[in-house]
Length: 72
Image (cartoon, rainbow, N blue to C red; front, side, top):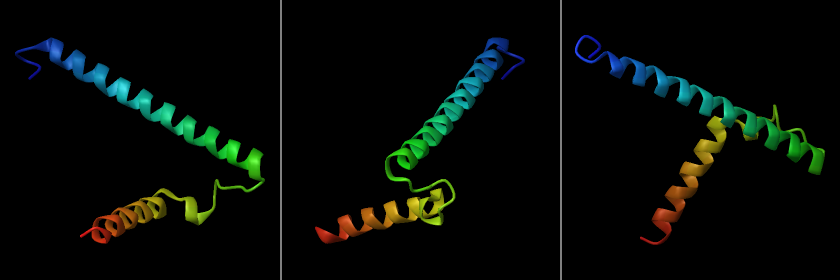
Protein backbone atom coordinates (compact mmCIF):
# COMPACT_ATOMS: atom_id res chain seq x y z
CA UNK A 1 0.00 0.00 0.00
CA UNK A 2 2.55 2.62 1.06
CA UNK A 3 5.24 1.47 -1.36
CA UNK A 4 3.08 2.03 -4.42
CA UNK A 5 1.11 5.07 -3.27
CA UNK A 6 2.57 7.12 -0.40
CA UNK A 7 -0.39 9.50 -0.47
CA UNK A 8 -2.62 6.67 0.75
CA UNK A 9 -0.64 6.57 4.01
CA UNK A 10 -1.24 10.27 4.47
CA UNK A 11 -4.95 9.78 3.82
CA UNK A 12 -5.08 6.90 6.29
CA UNK A 13 -3.48 9.03 9.01
CA UNK A 14 -5.88 11.89 8.28
CA UNK A 15 -8.85 9.54 8.60
CA UNK A 16 -7.41 8.16 11.83
CA UNK A 17 -7.00 11.67 13.25
CA UNK A 18 -10.53 12.65 12.19
CA UNK A 19 -12.04 9.55 13.81
CA UNK A 20 -10.11 10.20 17.02
CA UNK A 21 -11.35 13.80 17.05
CA UNK A 22 -14.95 12.72 16.48
CA UNK A 23 -14.68 10.27 19.36
CA UNK A 24 -13.45 13.05 21.65
CA UNK A 25 -16.33 15.29 20.52
CA UNK A 26 -18.79 12.50 21.32
CA UNK A 27 -17.22 11.97 24.74
CA UNK A 28 -17.54 15.69 25.47
CA UNK A 29 -21.18 15.63 24.34
CA UNK A 30 -21.89 12.75 26.73
CA UNK A 31 -20.25 14.64 29.59
CA UNK A 32 -22.28 17.77 28.81
CA UNK A 33 -25.52 15.78 28.69
CA UNK A 34 -24.77 14.20 32.07
CA UNK A 35 -24.16 17.66 33.54
CA UNK A 36 -27.46 18.89 32.07
CA UNK A 37 -29.32 15.92 33.59
CA UNK A 38 -27.73 16.70 36.95
CA UNK A 39 -28.61 20.40 36.71
CA UNK A 40 -32.22 19.66 35.75
CA UNK A 41 -32.97 16.78 38.12
CA UNK A 42 -30.23 16.75 40.79
CA UNK A 43 -29.64 13.09 39.91
CA UNK A 44 -26.02 12.14 39.35
CA UNK A 45 -26.01 9.72 36.42
CA UNK A 46 -22.23 9.69 35.95
CA UNK A 47 -21.61 6.56 38.01
CA UNK A 48 -25.06 5.01 38.16
CA UNK A 49 -24.87 1.40 36.91
CA UNK A 50 -28.17 1.62 35.01
CA UNK A 51 -26.67 4.30 32.74
CA UNK A 52 -23.54 2.36 31.75
CA UNK A 53 -23.06 1.69 28.04
CA UNK A 54 -23.33 -2.08 28.42
CA UNK A 55 -26.68 -1.85 30.23
CA UNK A 56 -28.06 0.70 27.79
CA UNK A 57 -27.00 -1.41 24.79
CA UNK A 58 -28.64 -4.47 26.32
CA UNK A 59 -31.86 -2.51 26.95
CA UNK A 60 -31.87 -1.14 23.42
CA UNK A 61 -31.32 -4.55 21.88
CA UNK A 62 -34.04 -6.13 24.01
CA UNK A 63 -36.46 -3.33 23.08
CA UNK A 64 -35.70 -3.88 19.42
CA UNK A 65 -36.27 -7.61 19.89
CA UNK A 66 -39.58 -6.92 21.64
CA UNK A 67 -40.70 -4.67 18.80
CA UNK A 68 -39.71 -7.19 16.13
CA UNK A 69 -41.56 -10.06 17.83
CA UNK A 70 -44.58 -7.94 18.71
CA UNK A 71 -45.66 -7.55 15.08
CA UNK A 72 -44.71 -11.04 13.92
